[in-house]
Image 1 (spheres, rainbow, N blue to C red):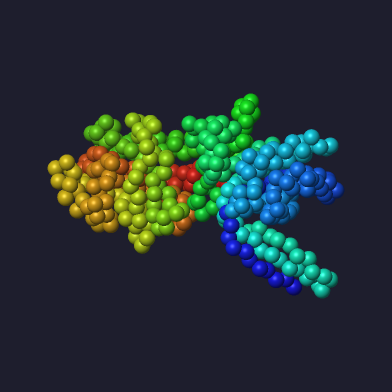
Image 2: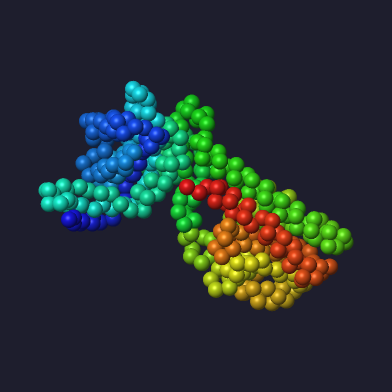
Length: 399
Protein backbone atom coordinates (compact mmCIF):
# COMPACT_ATOMS: atom_id res chain seq x y z
CA UNK A 1 0.00 0.00 0.00
CA UNK A 2 1.04 3.58 -0.43
CA UNK A 3 -0.14 7.07 0.39
CA UNK A 4 0.80 10.32 -1.31
CA UNK A 5 0.73 13.85 0.05
CA UNK A 6 1.03 16.42 -2.77
CA UNK A 7 2.93 19.63 -2.10
CA UNK A 8 2.09 23.08 -3.43
CA UNK A 9 3.27 23.75 -6.97
CA UNK A 10 6.72 25.28 -7.14
CA UNK A 11 8.86 26.94 -9.76
CA UNK A 12 12.51 26.13 -9.87
CA UNK A 13 15.57 24.78 -11.59
CA UNK A 14 15.33 21.35 -13.17
CA UNK A 15 18.11 19.12 -14.47
CA UNK A 16 17.70 15.73 -16.11
CA UNK A 17 20.59 13.63 -17.37
CA UNK A 18 20.89 10.27 -19.04
CA UNK A 19 23.77 7.97 -19.83
CA UNK A 20 24.14 7.67 -23.61
CA UNK A 21 23.67 4.17 -25.11
CA UNK A 22 22.61 2.89 -21.70
CA UNK A 23 20.47 0.09 -23.15
CA UNK A 24 23.50 -1.35 -24.95
CA UNK A 25 25.38 -1.92 -21.69
CA UNK A 26 25.32 -5.15 -19.73
CA UNK A 27 23.46 -5.18 -16.43
CA UNK A 28 26.73 -4.93 -14.53
CA UNK A 29 27.93 -2.04 -16.71
CA UNK A 30 24.62 -0.20 -16.22
CA UNK A 31 24.84 -0.58 -12.47
CA UNK A 32 28.44 0.66 -12.39
CA UNK A 33 27.65 3.67 -14.62
CA UNK A 34 24.66 4.77 -12.51
CA UNK A 35 26.67 4.27 -9.32
CA UNK A 36 29.48 6.46 -10.69
CA UNK A 37 27.00 9.22 -11.54
CA UNK A 38 25.37 8.92 -8.11
CA UNK A 39 28.73 9.21 -6.38
CA UNK A 40 29.23 12.59 -8.06
CA UNK A 41 25.80 13.86 -7.05
CA UNK A 42 26.26 12.86 -3.41
CA UNK A 43 29.72 14.30 -2.87
CA UNK A 44 29.91 17.24 -0.48
CA UNK A 45 30.42 19.94 -3.12
CA UNK A 46 27.42 18.77 -5.16
CA UNK A 47 25.09 18.61 -2.16
CA UNK A 48 26.17 22.14 -1.18
CA UNK A 49 25.30 23.43 -4.67
CA UNK A 50 21.89 21.74 -4.68
CA UNK A 51 20.78 23.11 -1.32
CA UNK A 52 18.56 21.50 1.28
CA UNK A 53 15.14 21.51 -0.45
CA UNK A 54 16.18 19.49 -3.48
CA UNK A 55 14.53 16.46 -5.06
CA UNK A 56 16.65 13.76 -6.69
CA UNK A 57 14.87 10.90 -8.45
CA UNK A 58 16.32 8.07 -10.50
CA UNK A 59 15.12 7.82 -14.11
CA UNK A 60 16.48 4.37 -14.95
CA UNK A 61 19.39 5.62 -17.05
CA UNK A 62 20.17 8.78 -15.10
CA UNK A 63 18.73 11.22 -12.59
CA UNK A 64 16.26 14.09 -12.29
CA UNK A 65 17.11 16.98 -9.97
CA UNK A 66 14.61 19.71 -9.06
CA UNK A 67 15.40 22.66 -6.80
CA UNK A 68 12.69 25.22 -5.93
CA UNK A 69 13.80 28.80 -6.49
CA UNK A 70 11.64 30.50 -3.85
CA UNK A 71 14.61 30.67 -1.48
CA UNK A 72 17.14 31.55 -4.21
CA UNK A 73 19.37 28.99 -2.47
CA UNK A 74 20.52 27.45 -5.77
CA UNK A 75 22.24 29.71 -8.31
CA UNK A 76 21.89 29.30 -12.07
CA UNK A 77 25.66 29.40 -12.54
CA UNK A 78 26.22 26.66 -9.96
CA UNK A 79 23.48 24.54 -11.54
CA UNK A 80 25.11 24.69 -14.98
CA UNK A 81 28.56 24.11 -13.44
CA UNK A 82 27.15 20.99 -11.78
CA UNK A 83 25.89 19.75 -15.16
CA UNK A 84 29.30 20.42 -16.72
CA UNK A 85 31.04 18.58 -13.87
CA UNK A 86 28.75 15.57 -14.25
CA UNK A 87 29.57 15.31 -17.95
CA UNK A 88 33.32 15.49 -17.28
CA UNK A 89 33.08 13.01 -14.41
CA UNK A 90 31.46 10.40 -16.64
CA UNK A 91 33.74 10.98 -19.62
CA UNK A 92 36.86 10.70 -17.45
CA UNK A 93 35.76 7.45 -15.88
CA UNK A 94 37.17 4.05 -16.68
CA UNK A 95 35.47 3.02 -18.81
CA UNK A 96 34.42 6.39 -20.23
CA UNK A 97 30.66 6.98 -20.48
CA UNK A 98 28.85 9.66 -22.42
CA UNK A 99 26.30 11.80 -20.58
CA UNK A 100 23.82 14.30 -21.95
CA UNK A 101 21.98 16.85 -19.83
CA UNK A 102 18.87 19.00 -20.13
CA UNK A 103 18.40 22.12 -17.97
CA UNK A 104 15.14 24.05 -17.61
CA UNK A 105 13.40 26.49 -15.30
CA UNK A 106 9.74 25.73 -14.83
CA UNK A 107 6.88 24.58 -12.64
CA UNK A 108 6.82 21.33 -10.71
CA UNK A 109 5.40 19.83 -7.57
CA UNK A 110 6.23 16.73 -5.59
CA UNK A 111 4.53 13.82 -3.95
CA UNK A 112 5.64 12.50 -0.59
CA UNK A 113 5.12 8.78 -1.10
CA UNK A 114 4.88 6.52 1.92
CA UNK A 115 5.33 3.03 0.51
CA UNK A 116 4.62 -0.20 2.36
CA UNK A 117 5.18 -3.04 -0.08
CA UNK A 118 3.73 -6.39 1.05
CA UNK A 119 3.83 -5.25 4.66
CA UNK A 120 7.63 -5.35 4.77
CA UNK A 121 8.04 -1.89 6.19
CA UNK A 122 7.56 1.72 5.16
CA UNK A 123 9.84 3.43 2.67
CA UNK A 124 9.15 7.19 2.50
CA UNK A 125 10.28 8.90 -0.70
CA UNK A 126 9.70 12.21 -2.50
CA UNK A 127 8.83 12.14 -6.21
CA UNK A 128 8.95 15.22 -8.44
CA UNK A 129 6.15 15.65 -11.00
CA UNK A 130 4.79 18.41 -13.23
CA UNK A 131 4.95 20.16 -16.58
CA UNK A 132 8.41 21.61 -16.02
CA UNK A 133 9.89 18.18 -15.37
CA UNK A 134 8.06 16.74 -18.38
CA UNK A 135 9.48 19.46 -20.64
CA UNK A 136 13.00 18.98 -19.32
CA UNK A 137 12.78 15.22 -19.88
CA UNK A 138 11.96 15.80 -23.53
CA UNK A 139 14.83 18.16 -24.31
CA UNK A 140 17.49 15.80 -22.95
CA UNK A 141 16.99 13.45 -25.89
CA UNK A 142 17.94 16.12 -28.42
CA UNK A 143 21.59 16.20 -27.39
CA UNK A 144 24.52 13.97 -28.20
CA UNK A 145 27.00 12.71 -25.61
CA UNK A 146 28.56 15.70 -23.84
CA UNK A 147 25.79 18.16 -24.75
CA UNK A 148 24.12 20.39 -22.16
CA UNK A 149 20.81 21.55 -23.64
CA UNK A 150 19.29 24.60 -21.93
CA UNK A 151 15.91 26.26 -22.45
CA UNK A 152 15.66 29.93 -23.29
CA UNK A 153 13.50 30.34 -20.18
CA UNK A 154 16.38 29.24 -17.92
CA UNK A 155 18.85 31.51 -19.75
CA UNK A 156 16.50 34.52 -19.56
CA UNK A 157 16.07 34.10 -15.79
CA UNK A 158 19.83 33.75 -15.35
CA UNK A 159 20.51 36.84 -17.46
CA UNK A 160 17.97 38.83 -15.45
CA UNK A 161 19.73 38.09 -12.17
CA UNK A 162 23.34 38.17 -13.41
CA UNK A 163 23.54 40.15 -16.63
CA UNK A 164 23.14 39.69 -20.37
CA UNK A 165 26.82 38.77 -20.72
CA UNK A 166 26.06 35.19 -19.70
CA UNK A 167 24.34 34.67 -23.07
CA UNK A 168 27.82 34.53 -24.64
CA UNK A 169 28.22 31.11 -23.03
CA UNK A 170 25.42 29.64 -25.14
CA UNK A 171 25.07 28.74 -28.78
CA UNK A 172 23.55 29.93 -31.04
CA UNK A 173 25.24 33.10 -29.81
CA UNK A 174 23.30 36.34 -29.01
CA UNK A 175 21.81 37.90 -32.12
CA UNK A 176 20.93 34.52 -33.60
CA UNK A 177 17.61 32.76 -33.07
CA UNK A 178 17.50 29.80 -30.67
CA UNK A 179 16.44 26.38 -31.90
CA UNK A 180 12.69 25.83 -31.65
CA UNK A 181 11.47 22.31 -30.99
CA UNK A 182 7.97 20.92 -30.57
CA UNK A 183 7.75 19.08 -27.27
CA UNK A 184 4.09 18.03 -27.06
CA UNK A 185 0.69 18.77 -28.64
CA UNK A 186 2.17 21.50 -30.82
CA UNK A 187 3.74 23.27 -27.83
CA UNK A 188 7.25 24.51 -28.55
CA UNK A 189 10.37 25.32 -26.55
CA UNK A 190 13.33 27.48 -27.51
CA UNK A 191 16.72 25.90 -26.84
CA UNK A 192 20.40 26.75 -26.84
CA UNK A 193 23.47 24.69 -26.01
CA UNK A 194 25.97 25.49 -23.30
CA UNK A 195 29.08 26.10 -25.40
CA UNK A 196 31.48 28.48 -23.60
CA UNK A 197 34.73 29.55 -25.24
CA UNK A 198 36.10 27.41 -28.04
CA UNK A 199 33.34 24.85 -27.63
CA UNK A 200 31.17 27.13 -29.76
CA UNK A 201 32.58 25.28 -32.79
CA UNK A 202 31.38 21.88 -31.57
CA UNK A 203 29.06 20.31 -34.21
CA UNK A 204 25.33 20.52 -33.62
CA UNK A 205 23.69 17.33 -32.32
CA UNK A 206 22.53 14.89 -34.99
CA UNK A 207 18.87 15.56 -34.20
CA UNK A 208 19.32 19.31 -34.62
CA UNK A 209 21.01 18.77 -37.98
CA UNK A 210 18.14 16.52 -39.03
CA UNK A 211 15.58 19.13 -37.96
CA UNK A 212 17.35 21.86 -39.90
CA UNK A 213 17.45 19.69 -43.01
CA UNK A 214 13.70 19.05 -42.66
CA UNK A 215 13.02 22.79 -42.28
CA UNK A 216 15.05 23.54 -45.41
CA UNK A 217 13.21 20.87 -47.38
CA UNK A 218 9.88 22.15 -46.08
CA UNK A 219 10.63 25.57 -47.54
CA UNK A 220 11.62 23.92 -50.81
CA UNK A 221 8.28 22.10 -50.91
CA UNK A 222 6.43 25.42 -50.67
CA UNK A 223 8.45 26.70 -53.63
CA UNK A 224 7.52 23.53 -55.54
CA UNK A 225 3.83 24.06 -54.70
CA UNK A 226 4.05 27.54 -56.20
CA UNK A 227 5.76 26.22 -59.33
CA UNK A 228 3.30 23.33 -59.58
CA UNK A 229 0.32 25.67 -59.41
CA UNK A 230 1.72 28.00 -62.08
CA UNK A 231 2.63 25.11 -64.40
CA UNK A 232 -0.81 23.49 -64.05
CA UNK A 233 -2.71 26.77 -64.47
CA UNK A 234 -0.75 27.69 -67.60
CA UNK A 235 -1.31 24.20 -69.01
CA UNK A 236 -5.04 24.82 -68.72
CA UNK A 237 -4.82 28.36 -70.13
CA UNK A 238 -1.63 29.59 -71.83
CA UNK A 239 -2.82 33.20 -71.52
CA UNK A 240 -2.05 33.21 -67.79
CA UNK A 241 1.27 34.96 -67.09
CA UNK A 242 3.37 34.16 -64.02
CA UNK A 243 3.87 37.86 -63.27
CA UNK A 244 0.14 38.60 -63.17
CA UNK A 245 -0.60 35.51 -61.08
CA UNK A 246 1.80 36.75 -58.34
CA UNK A 247 1.51 33.58 -56.24
CA UNK A 248 2.42 33.24 -52.57
CA UNK A 249 2.31 29.98 -50.58
CA UNK A 250 1.87 29.96 -46.78
CA UNK A 251 1.74 27.15 -44.25
CA UNK A 252 -0.65 27.33 -41.29
CA UNK A 253 -0.78 25.10 -38.20
CA UNK A 254 -3.00 24.85 -35.10
CA UNK A 255 -1.96 27.19 -32.30
CA UNK A 256 -1.14 25.13 -29.21
CA UNK A 257 -1.94 28.06 -26.89
CA UNK A 258 -5.00 29.60 -28.54
CA UNK A 259 -7.28 26.59 -28.89
CA UNK A 260 -9.23 26.11 -32.13
CA UNK A 261 -7.14 28.55 -34.15
CA UNK A 262 -5.06 27.98 -37.27
CA UNK A 263 -2.08 30.32 -37.03
CA UNK A 264 0.55 31.37 -39.58
CA UNK A 265 4.00 29.82 -39.32
CA UNK A 266 7.47 30.90 -40.38
CA UNK A 267 7.09 28.76 -43.50
CA UNK A 268 6.01 30.92 -46.41
CA UNK A 269 7.26 31.29 -49.96
CA UNK A 270 7.20 34.14 -52.44
CA UNK A 271 10.21 35.06 -54.62
CA UNK A 272 10.33 38.53 -53.06
CA UNK A 273 9.53 37.47 -49.49
CA UNK A 274 13.06 36.62 -48.33
CA UNK A 275 13.50 37.78 -44.74
CA UNK A 276 9.89 38.96 -44.44
CA UNK A 277 8.14 38.70 -41.10
CA UNK A 278 5.70 35.88 -40.41
CA UNK A 279 2.08 36.58 -41.34
CA UNK A 280 -0.46 37.73 -38.75
CA UNK A 281 -3.78 36.40 -40.12
CA UNK A 282 -5.27 33.49 -38.17
CA UNK A 283 -8.36 31.41 -38.89
CA UNK A 284 -10.84 29.56 -36.73
CA UNK A 285 -10.93 25.78 -37.16
CA UNK A 286 -14.07 25.24 -35.08
CA UNK A 287 -17.08 23.74 -36.91
CA UNK A 288 -16.46 24.26 -40.65
CA UNK A 289 -13.62 26.73 -40.08
CA UNK A 290 -13.15 30.26 -41.38
CA UNK A 291 -11.22 31.59 -44.33
CA UNK A 292 -9.69 29.45 -47.06
CA UNK A 293 -7.10 27.77 -44.80
CA UNK A 294 -9.44 27.28 -41.83
CA UNK A 295 -12.16 25.83 -44.07
CA UNK A 296 -9.71 23.37 -45.67
CA UNK A 297 -8.40 22.23 -42.28
CA UNK A 298 -11.83 21.83 -40.66
CA UNK A 299 -13.49 20.06 -43.61
CA UNK A 300 -10.44 17.91 -44.43
CA UNK A 301 -10.69 18.86 -48.11
CA UNK A 302 -9.29 21.46 -50.51
CA UNK A 303 -11.06 24.82 -50.51
CA UNK A 304 -11.14 27.25 -53.45
CA UNK A 305 -12.19 30.90 -53.63
CA UNK A 306 -11.76 32.47 -57.07
CA UNK A 307 -12.87 35.41 -59.20
CA UNK A 308 -13.05 37.69 -56.18
CA UNK A 309 -13.85 41.39 -56.79
CA UNK A 310 -11.05 43.94 -56.96
CA UNK A 311 -10.59 45.20 -53.36
CA UNK A 312 -9.09 48.46 -54.65
CA UNK A 313 -12.39 49.30 -56.30
CA UNK A 314 -14.68 48.09 -53.54
CA UNK A 315 -13.49 46.59 -50.28
CA UNK A 316 -17.13 46.03 -49.33
CA UNK A 317 -17.73 43.81 -52.37
CA UNK A 318 -14.47 41.97 -51.77
CA UNK A 319 -15.38 41.28 -48.14
CA UNK A 320 -18.90 40.22 -49.12
CA UNK A 321 -17.48 37.65 -51.56
CA UNK A 322 -15.40 36.13 -48.74
CA UNK A 323 -18.21 36.29 -46.16
CA UNK A 324 -19.43 32.74 -46.97
CA UNK A 325 -16.04 31.51 -45.75
CA UNK A 326 -16.90 32.89 -42.31
CA UNK A 327 -14.74 36.01 -42.50
CA UNK A 328 -16.03 39.40 -41.39
CA UNK A 329 -15.16 42.69 -43.07
CA UNK A 330 -12.88 43.46 -40.11
CA UNK A 331 -11.05 40.17 -40.71
CA UNK A 332 -10.59 40.95 -44.39
CA UNK A 333 -9.24 44.43 -43.64
CA UNK A 334 -6.36 42.81 -41.76
CA UNK A 335 -5.18 40.89 -44.84
CA UNK A 336 -1.65 41.92 -45.78
CA UNK A 337 -2.31 40.72 -49.34
CA UNK A 338 -5.88 41.00 -50.55
CA UNK A 339 -5.63 38.21 -53.08
CA UNK A 340 -8.19 37.71 -55.86
CA UNK A 341 -8.12 33.91 -55.59
CA UNK A 342 -7.24 31.32 -52.95
CA UNK A 343 -6.54 27.61 -53.03
CA UNK A 344 -6.13 25.93 -49.64
CA UNK A 345 -5.64 22.28 -48.80
CA UNK A 346 -4.95 20.32 -45.60
CA UNK A 347 -1.79 18.32 -45.16
CA UNK A 348 -1.33 15.24 -43.00
CA UNK A 349 -0.71 11.52 -42.97
CA UNK A 350 -4.41 10.99 -42.33
CA UNK A 351 -7.04 13.11 -44.11
CA UNK A 352 -9.25 13.06 -41.01
CA UNK A 353 -6.50 14.37 -38.72
CA UNK A 354 -4.54 17.04 -40.61
CA UNK A 355 -1.38 18.61 -39.23
CA UNK A 356 -2.13 21.97 -40.82
CA UNK A 357 -3.14 23.65 -44.05
CA UNK A 358 -1.43 25.29 -47.00
CA UNK A 359 -2.86 28.44 -48.53
CA UNK A 360 -1.97 29.51 -52.07
CA UNK A 361 -3.04 33.12 -52.59
CA UNK A 362 -3.09 34.56 -56.11
CA UNK A 363 -3.40 38.21 -57.10
CA UNK A 364 -5.02 37.22 -60.43
CA UNK A 365 -8.77 36.37 -60.06
CA UNK A 366 -8.42 33.34 -62.38
CA UNK A 367 -11.36 34.40 -64.51
CA UNK A 368 -9.83 32.45 -67.42
CA UNK A 369 -10.33 29.18 -65.52
CA UNK A 370 -13.57 27.48 -64.55
CA UNK A 371 -14.24 26.45 -60.94
CA UNK A 372 -13.91 22.82 -62.05
CA UNK A 373 -10.45 23.48 -63.46
CA UNK A 374 -9.30 25.25 -60.28
CA UNK A 375 -10.70 22.38 -58.23
CA UNK A 376 -8.64 20.04 -60.42
CA UNK A 377 -5.50 22.03 -59.56
CA UNK A 378 -6.37 21.99 -55.84
CA UNK A 379 -6.85 18.22 -55.88
CA UNK A 380 -3.53 17.79 -57.69
CA UNK A 381 -1.68 19.89 -55.10
CA UNK A 382 -3.29 17.98 -52.25
CA UNK A 383 -2.49 14.57 -53.74
CA UNK A 384 1.07 15.54 -54.63
CA UNK A 385 2.17 17.37 -51.48
CA UNK A 386 -0.02 16.57 -48.43
CA UNK A 387 1.85 13.51 -47.13
CA UNK A 388 5.35 14.84 -47.88
CA UNK A 389 4.57 18.11 -46.10
CA UNK A 390 3.27 16.19 -43.10
CA UNK A 391 6.44 14.10 -42.82
CA UNK A 392 8.69 17.16 -43.04
CA UNK A 393 6.48 19.14 -40.65
CA UNK A 394 6.83 16.44 -38.00
CA UNK A 395 10.57 16.15 -38.55
CA UNK A 396 11.25 19.89 -38.47
CA UNK A 397 11.40 20.04 -34.67
CA UNK A 398 9.42 17.22 -33.12
CA UNK A 399 10.84 15.58 -29.99
